[in-house]
Image (cartoon, rainbow, N blue to C red; front, side):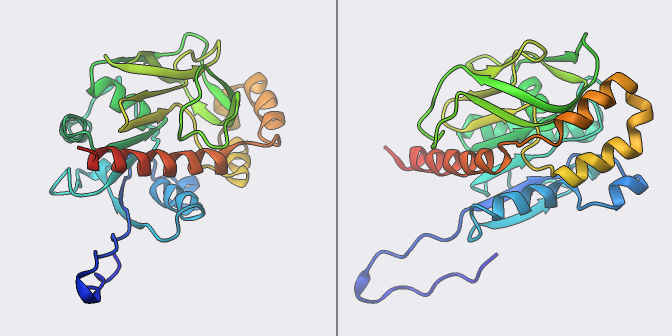
Length: 259
């Protein structure tokens, strides 16, 4: 974290420090494939640094039981994806869910990606389950049902890399579904001005997806892999979505400051 600024002269207001973002690493994959790439928390940090290089980032290995001692200290939490399943709870997931509920009750910003999107939904009273359609791999299109102020510039559809079998089947109470598709109706949701979640992966890159198909394509089946191999070469809106995430967090912080 950056060094605190000195007090300004003449009693002027002190400039605010950088936005503090805690990224919770949820992915339990420790395979040789995983070792060839930055971990999921670093993927998120790299993608956010491209749009907010002055923010302060820290990783917490939630998958190993490591959580911030004060769940409300950081301005925002971002929860990564994972090969783990919310439908098969483990103690570290339960501890993380408890902390999520504390942040939610306090109105502090939460952003969930894929597994994070699912864990937040379940922790706050929604339901997660296996998709009857099987594994979704490639690029998914989310038809956006509404345009919110932080969606600037706006888009009617959002394309992001996809790699999931579980998904949110019932959003949490008070959530507004931002968009989805026939395969995954709850592709993204928000709660109030402080929770933003997507089933998809704005942090992943095309080289990562290519390696994923090359390494694990035999597990997904020829039809799934053939479709995914074509889709992942298409343009995605990852950079734009991370810009939206940054704007969402900033607006959430502004809402906290408004009496």
